Image (tube, rainbow, N blue to C red; front, side, top):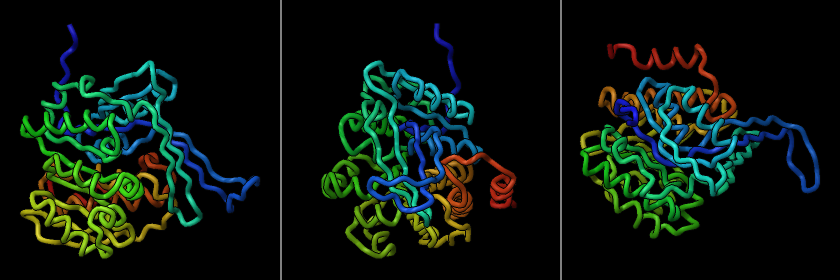
Length: 321
């Protein structure tokens, strides 16, 4: 008889990969060589969000697919070491995905995503009982850009909706939206009534066709009137607006940008943790901005927790208890 596990309130479904982070000390030239900083760690947008929700104090679970290889074992072990429940399917036919993140001198990153086991999740592999017992399900558009894993993600969303579970979406990548086509992407997104949508400025522009964040937010609110839209604007902070939430601008921190890798995932995880705990979108955005600012001032998507992060989380929540 299998062991019964307690339900986990927040599930993040999608990609668990191995990240290769590279920040050259000088410009990479064809045929040339240079020094730089490199790091290997567990990654993937959905897995990162689960880690950050857990770090922000909310129980989380990751659902996804890895290969039966050492990278998959290490990535799963890192998740569990963070206190995240890992419901992973290990495939003997696919390797664990790898993401290369190239970071320039200003801290901006460009990413090359390998299509590994995380792109191969099938509906029949979903842990249905785990999904149905949750409180919230988060998806990233990396699970929607092609099929598989699109059918699995949409089936998970259907199960969640039928069980009365709230849903959120991170649109994932403006470049991927452009590659598959704006209308094709919107057609997929429109099949699920999301409660929260987390675009960054580039993704909001790719979805809406509007250049200014305020105009893009107007378009998103018109297209998805039942959703709380949380528009991430990097150094300009965040704009939020929803059915019961008037438009609010939350200012960014003044942290120096070192590496933008994973900042959006950290923001989303912290936001969902606070929102699910207390139901206040504006306060959730303030906590998320603090966490996102801390992440971009360090190297990697999951820098080790330190006293400053603990202080920021505590300060952000003063007066709530």
